[in-house]
Image (cartoon, rainbow, N blue to C red):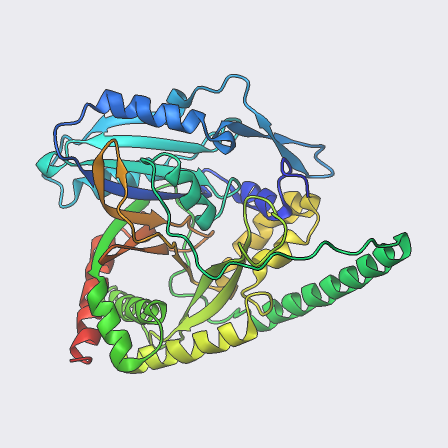
Amino acid sequence: MPLDRLSALDVAFLCLEGANTPMHMGAVATFRPRRHVDPERLVALLAQRAAGIPKLRRRVRSGLPLLGGAQWEDDPGFDALNHIGLSKLCDLYEPDPLAEFASHWMAEPLELDAPLWNVQLVTGLPDGEFALLVKFHHALTDGAGAVELAFGLLDDISLPVQRGGRAPQPEPEPRTPLQELRDGATAALGQAATSAGIASAVLRAARPYPISPTATLNSALRRIGLVRLDLGDVRSIRKTHGGTNNDVVLAVLAGALRDWMINRGQRADARSLRALIPVSLRGREAERAGGNVLSGYLCDLPVELDDPVDRLRVVRDVMARNKQAGPARGPGAIPILANRMPAGIHRIATKVAGRAAPLLFDTVVTNVPLPGIPMSLGGARLREIYPFVPLAPHQSVGIAVSTYRNALHIGLQANGEAVPDVGSLADAVTKSLAALYQRSL
């Protein structure tokens, strides 16, 4: 696929965009400077760096409506300063003024006829700290790609050298047209069979009844929650009970969602809450497939179980089965299926399919990997970084997780009408980790 073309999956994210369903991901990062910083100087620095990133200078140009395709083009009037704002927190009497500010900012959709990103520099935090709020449209990139773009805005960093790289590959033998045709037909048939298998798995996994307890009407309001957990506690739990750090986090989230539902007067034992867990295929694919290179797993979060260790055991077993099957098959591989459909179909059917999202999953839980090396902006050290995933249609909350240095940061993005009390969910996450950690001593 040409590098300037949007993939079918990229187009699907554009088609899901609406006033009540903005499809941008984001992050809130806080920095601690060694000395006083000039906000205007930081804005100029960000603008200079953004202007040097080709992907941030491009906008979408749609093709013929019936074909549904689209491609990237350079914005002739591009000015990075149009995408960078500067604000100062004034009302520090809010329980969490940064989260309150981020809630309003994250709710604002991006302009689809301009480059699909925005940045806000926020000063006025305690101890002279400042925050950088970033959002990228999902049509522009996926979570792993967003990290790469964000690195371009920060001070230069030296990423660790990966050992054990691939050995040099011999040049391929020349191929005849007949061989090319045969291999192309074989690949097409294999792809069709895989797509049919994914579609069949999706239909089998759909749960029309009972309706999800977290399904809701779409709303333009957003509520943001910021949760910081000690990575040492997560590792201690993993060492005692097995699994991976990600398994522990999913079990902690299951416990938090259970308590949150019960406190809202909802039954937690009616059925499991199912999470769609995006899986990056970057590095697995030989060619770039658009801004999004994704698949996914489905994981039933056992909110019906009261015992935290039992919840971890169930999550560990489910995720082990997912990994054994691989990310390219099963009902969680919806992004792969979407990418194999003609873009024109997304123009017609994506919004209808989006309304059916609660039949397949109740929330999205994504892990955004970050390198463990120190990072900075204008010499100010990065302290915390909370990622955010866009809300799927008719869903109450989306959850994104990143690990940086000795902490695990969880960004909660909630439908503001359905979840006005996102702080109680954030508290439930902390309490759920404590309960599981106590069972690990």
